[in-house]
Image 1 (cartoon, rainbow, N blue to C red):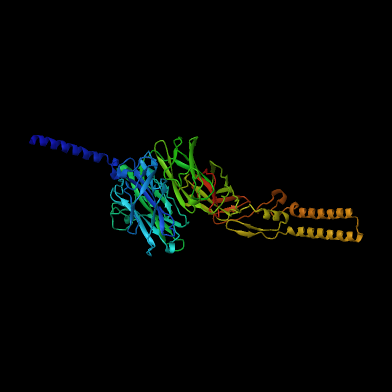
Image 2 (cartoon, helix red, strand yellow):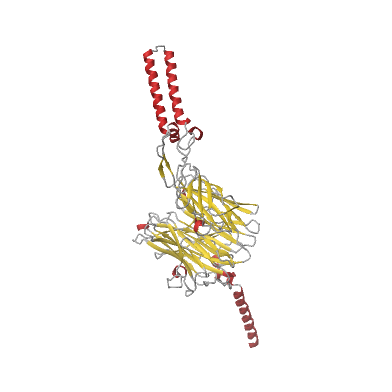
Length: 629
């Protein structure tokens, strides 16, 4: 009997040992490493102190934690969910969430929190705060089972966002930001750049900073910055973060030792919503995601066309966005949307991709309805090559309730696409017009990165004196053509009265002379006593035609102060020359130039121009490239 028991014990021990080894060799398949990414935001508080909290979460696929769906569109009900939101007022709710995207290359799923109680999915969770005089709350949620990385273990973690109810910032909303769960970085490079993007419906200034330990790691009591490994986390070695959200990373082998753990590094960042006058922190939102150091021989695809900055779209209008990507292999990459778009209604949001000559184009049509007014959105766009290397960038959107037409697209003139130039380089483009008569201003972007990610001119240089709008209303057109007295002309930042031209003086003498001649003819007719009614009509018709012909000569036949006849051009703007600290010169009525000597020789640059009106409308030119000798 003892022998049998001993044998059974040996079998049990062997099976246990095998199970333990499986746990050691295959940790990624277990629920202990499911968490990938998370961010939060909240919408405008209403009169009854109710807010809508939005949250996006990244997971591994598949796994068993909480019964998370493994297909896009799958919904995990609150009864099965393990996500509990703590509202900061002593209450909490277990919430429902839906899978919005799955990256099959990395087995990452992205899901959003929402409500499906009516059978129609509504993103976000509502909460009403008590009217007890409290104006500020910190909302949080957290769990364990984070994917292991170099700079954070798999222990407990948390996310927090600050909410304003009533008081000084009662009309405030939080920023909105989204990033992919995992951003790939080519190994052994010294100049990796990634631009974080956040939008804000209030147009507040936004700042980016590293998160603190208590904001992202719930088991650490110290609220210090991530400066060392004492709290089981430290920021990625060699990585920098600017206040404008530009991440740079030197991952040279001499700086970053990849080691093991799939070369994963956690980055935890706060986006702060800053008061424009006091600089106070009105709110903040978390961004928690991973960087993954990947194949050193395979650079990521590149974006050759991508909308820069937050794009404003008016309710009831349609704006088309074009995104293009190429890969150095010559094979067209795949473009995909990793996050939930503003709407799953195809009449509001529609997108399609096409390929031609190694270039992949993603075309997006966005037609927001009234329910989206005064809200902002962020959408993740990913380009993936045949070797599964990825490039990520975010599209920022803001919906305006003000009806507005965008300016026309600026037309690039020189330097020509794919040209070779020497410094100093002068950029020339044709300006825009605006059918709403809004003044138009310009930003020029010059960057060694085709996606325009980086500091300096990659972020745009304001062309402050550009953009006289030359689409006058009909009554102004009629007035100026009939009696062309000088009238005010408005530039984007300049309002200038054109001075009286001496060439106008002869016109006055001509007019006075004609009036004197007509007076003499009328006086002579009276003295001749023209009584025949037919003759009298003929004479007065002659007088009337003579007067009209004289006015026509005065207003149309002579050259105006800009050197062209009004009859040829109908209405043409002045030839203003304005030179600013930005080196811009408005050389003609519709062509503008910008000159710089701050470029590097033997470097290829990309450039484009964005025209903006005073109501948030914008239009982006093509992207051209040139090389500095």
